[in-house]
Length: 172
Image 1 (spheres, rainbow, N blue to C red):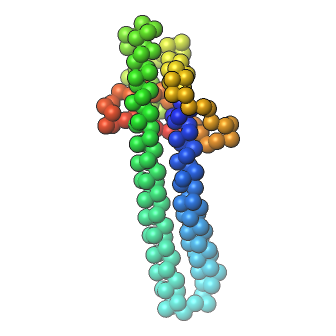
Image 2 (image 1 turned 180 degrees about the vertical axis):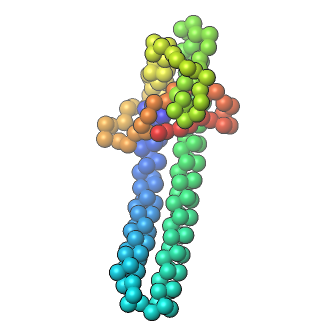
Image 3 (image 1 turned 180 degrees about the horizontal axis):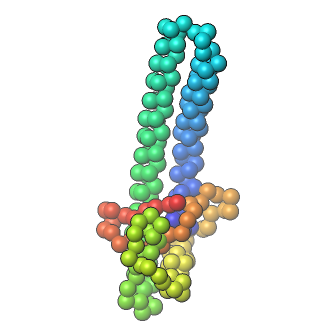
Protein backbone atom coordinates (compact mmCIF):
# COMPACT_ATOMS: atom_id res chain seq x y z
CA UNK A 1 0.00 0.00 0.00
CA UNK A 2 2.97 2.31 0.51
CA UNK A 3 4.23 1.95 -3.06
CA UNK A 4 3.32 4.51 -5.70
CA UNK A 5 1.41 1.81 -7.56
CA UNK A 6 -0.49 0.83 -4.41
CA UNK A 7 -1.40 4.42 -3.66
CA UNK A 8 -2.56 4.92 -7.25
CA UNK A 9 -4.70 1.77 -7.06
CA UNK A 10 -6.25 2.94 -3.78
CA UNK A 11 -7.03 6.38 -5.24
CA UNK A 12 -8.59 4.75 -8.33
CA UNK A 13 -10.77 2.51 -6.15
CA UNK A 14 -11.92 5.48 -4.06
CA UNK A 15 -12.84 7.35 -7.24
CA UNK A 16 -14.65 4.32 -8.65
CA UNK A 17 -16.71 3.77 -5.51
CA UNK A 18 -17.44 7.45 -4.81
CA UNK A 19 -20.85 7.37 -6.60
CA UNK A 20 -21.88 4.26 -4.62
CA UNK A 21 -20.80 5.94 -1.39
CA UNK A 22 -22.88 9.01 -2.27
CA UNK A 23 -25.87 6.79 -3.08
CA UNK A 24 -25.57 5.03 0.28
CA UNK A 25 -25.32 8.36 2.08
CA UNK A 26 -28.48 9.56 0.32
CA UNK A 27 -30.29 6.36 1.36
CA UNK A 28 -29.12 6.79 4.97
CA UNK A 29 -30.29 10.42 4.95
CA UNK A 30 -33.68 9.30 3.64
CA UNK A 31 -34.04 6.74 6.45
CA UNK A 32 -33.08 9.39 9.01
CA UNK A 33 -35.65 11.80 7.57
CA UNK A 34 -38.37 9.15 7.70
CA UNK A 35 -37.51 8.40 11.34
CA UNK A 36 -37.58 12.09 12.28
CA UNK A 37 -40.90 12.56 10.49
CA UNK A 38 -42.26 9.56 12.36
CA UNK A 39 -41.17 11.01 15.70
CA UNK A 40 -42.56 14.45 14.85
CA UNK A 41 -45.92 13.09 13.72
CA UNK A 42 -46.02 10.70 16.68
CA UNK A 43 -49.48 10.73 18.26
CA UNK A 44 -51.16 12.40 15.27
CA UNK A 45 -50.92 9.25 13.15
CA UNK A 46 -53.52 6.54 13.02
CA UNK A 47 -52.40 3.04 13.95
CA UNK A 48 -52.59 1.96 10.29
CA UNK A 49 -50.50 4.94 9.15
CA UNK A 50 -47.96 4.39 11.94
CA UNK A 51 -47.61 0.70 11.00
CA UNK A 52 -47.26 1.60 7.33
CA UNK A 53 -44.49 4.11 8.06
CA UNK A 54 -42.71 1.66 10.37
CA UNK A 55 -42.77 -0.99 7.63
CA UNK A 56 -41.40 1.49 5.11
CA UNK A 57 -38.60 2.50 7.47
CA UNK A 58 -37.78 -1.14 8.20
CA UNK A 59 -37.67 -2.03 4.49
CA UNK A 60 -35.46 0.94 3.67
CA UNK A 61 -33.10 0.13 6.56
CA UNK A 62 -32.77 -3.46 5.37
CA UNK A 63 -32.08 -2.30 1.81
CA UNK A 64 -29.53 0.20 3.11
CA UNK A 65 -27.76 -2.49 5.15
CA UNK A 66 -27.61 -4.81 2.13
CA UNK A 67 -26.26 -2.02 -0.07
CA UNK A 68 -23.60 -1.11 2.49
CA UNK A 69 -22.53 -4.74 2.84
CA UNK A 70 -22.49 -5.30 -0.93
CA UNK A 71 -20.44 -2.14 -1.51
CA UNK A 72 -18.02 -3.04 1.28
CA UNK A 73 -17.57 -6.56 -0.13
CA UNK A 74 -17.09 -5.29 -3.69
CA UNK A 75 -14.57 -2.67 -2.56
CA UNK A 76 -12.66 -5.11 -0.36
CA UNK A 77 -12.61 -7.74 -3.09
CA UNK A 78 -11.21 -5.36 -5.66
CA UNK A 79 -8.74 -3.91 -3.19
CA UNK A 80 -7.51 -7.39 -2.22
CA UNK A 81 -7.14 -8.31 -5.88
CA UNK A 82 -5.19 -5.15 -6.77
CA UNK A 83 -2.99 -5.23 -3.70
CA UNK A 84 -2.42 -8.98 -4.03
CA UNK A 85 -1.02 -8.44 -7.51
CA UNK A 86 1.21 -5.63 -6.26
CA UNK A 87 2.27 -7.69 -3.23
CA UNK A 88 3.50 -10.45 -5.52
CA UNK A 89 5.63 -7.97 -7.43
CA UNK A 90 6.93 -6.35 -4.23
CA UNK A 91 7.85 -9.80 -2.91
CA UNK A 92 10.18 -10.26 -5.87
CA UNK A 93 11.83 -6.89 -5.24
CA UNK A 94 12.08 -7.65 -1.52
CA UNK A 95 13.72 -11.00 -2.21
CA UNK A 96 16.29 -9.42 -4.53
CA UNK A 97 16.93 -6.62 -2.02
CA UNK A 98 17.44 -9.11 0.82
CA UNK A 99 19.81 -11.25 -1.25
CA UNK A 100 21.82 -8.27 -2.49
CA UNK A 101 22.17 -6.87 1.03
CA UNK A 102 23.02 -10.12 2.80
CA UNK A 103 19.82 -10.62 4.80
CA UNK A 104 19.16 -14.20 5.88
CA UNK A 105 15.66 -13.60 7.27
CA UNK A 106 12.91 -11.10 6.56
CA UNK A 107 9.87 -10.93 8.85
CA UNK A 108 6.52 -9.23 8.28
CA UNK A 109 6.08 -6.94 11.26
CA UNK A 110 3.44 -4.76 9.57
CA UNK A 111 0.44 -6.61 10.94
CA UNK A 112 1.35 -6.23 14.61
CA UNK A 113 -1.54 -3.85 15.24
CA UNK A 114 -4.14 -6.29 13.95
CA UNK A 115 -2.97 -9.58 15.39
CA UNK A 116 -0.47 -11.03 17.81
CA UNK A 117 2.99 -10.94 16.33
CA UNK A 118 5.91 -13.07 17.50
CA UNK A 119 8.10 -9.96 17.18
CA UNK A 120 8.32 -8.41 20.62
CA UNK A 121 10.88 -5.76 19.74
CA UNK A 122 13.07 -4.84 16.79
CA UNK A 123 15.46 -1.96 16.23
CA UNK A 124 14.16 0.46 13.61
CA UNK A 125 17.47 0.08 11.78
CA UNK A 126 16.41 -3.48 10.87
CA UNK A 127 13.26 -2.26 9.09
CA UNK A 128 13.85 -2.51 5.33
CA UNK A 129 10.29 -1.54 4.36
CA UNK A 130 11.11 1.92 3.04
CA UNK A 131 14.14 0.67 1.10
CA UNK A 132 12.06 -2.08 -0.51
CA UNK A 133 9.26 0.37 -1.37
CA UNK A 134 11.76 2.76 -2.94
CA UNK A 135 13.35 -0.07 -4.93
CA UNK A 136 9.92 -1.20 -6.10
CA UNK A 137 8.85 2.33 -7.06
CA UNK A 138 12.03 2.74 -9.08
CA UNK A 139 11.51 -0.59 -10.85
CA UNK A 140 7.77 -0.09 -11.50
CA UNK A 141 8.17 3.38 -13.01
CA UNK A 142 4.82 4.43 -11.48
CA UNK A 143 5.03 8.09 -10.42
CA UNK A 144 4.04 9.18 -6.91
CA UNK A 145 0.46 10.31 -6.38
CA UNK A 146 -0.17 14.03 -5.90
CA UNK A 147 -0.35 15.06 -2.25
CA UNK A 148 -4.11 15.60 -2.57
CA UNK A 149 -4.81 12.03 -3.72
CA UNK A 150 -6.42 9.67 -1.25
CA UNK A 151 -3.83 7.45 0.39
CA UNK A 152 -4.14 4.52 2.74
CA UNK A 153 -2.96 5.35 6.21
CA UNK A 154 -1.12 3.29 8.75
CA UNK A 155 2.18 1.55 8.88
CA UNK A 156 2.49 -1.71 7.07
CA UNK A 157 5.42 -3.79 6.02
CA UNK A 158 4.75 -5.64 2.80
CA UNK A 159 6.63 -8.87 3.09
CA UNK A 160 4.06 -11.52 2.15
CA UNK A 161 4.32 -14.56 4.36
CA UNK A 162 1.47 -16.28 2.55
CA UNK A 163 1.08 -17.85 -0.85
CA UNK A 164 -0.01 -15.60 -3.74
CA UNK A 165 -3.54 -16.99 -3.45
CA UNK A 166 -3.90 -15.60 0.08
CA UNK A 167 -2.21 -12.21 0.01
CA UNK A 168 -1.87 -10.15 3.15
CA UNK A 169 -3.43 -6.83 2.19
CA UNK A 170 -4.59 -4.46 4.86
CA UNK A 171 -4.99 -0.76 5.24
CA UNK A 172 -5.86 1.09 8.38
